[in-house]
Image 1 (cartoon, rainbow, N blue to C red):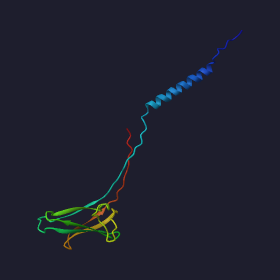
Image 2 (tube, helix red, strand yellow; image 1 turned 135 degrees about the horizontal axis):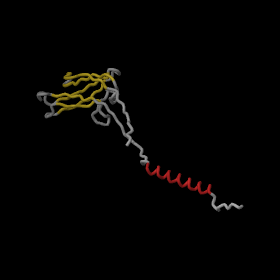
Image 3 (tube, rainbow, N blue to C red; image 1 turned 180 degrees about the vertical axis):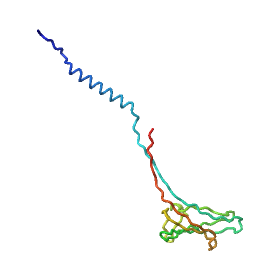
Image 4 (tube, helix red, strand yellow; image 1 turned 90 degrees about the vertical axis):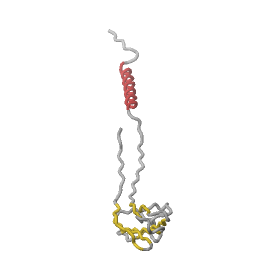
Length: 150
């Protein structure tokens, strides 16, 4: 009795079918996956304190307001001088001011003020006399980034 074997053996067909099935499965999985995108976040946090003075009834006329902020930790004083015209009763300023601003809080050495965490006192002098003042605490600030899944 003689057995005839086909020219193409079964194991070769199974290997080809397995490769083809695997390739189709890989294509199916890749096409179903969402396209990969990189998340790029730009984050910034800046703490600033708004200080101000106001001649409530407009009786003084034009005047010079000199703001002085004292850092209790370092002992440094930072100054900002504002000229107020005839029709200006008051002014608000932000501490610290960006050094690129022509009018910024600076020490007598020219060093720009920074938002260093800690306790501060401030006053505003008009005609060389303390008109108003107060105190504040700069908080520590930090940035957190959260990845959002779709």
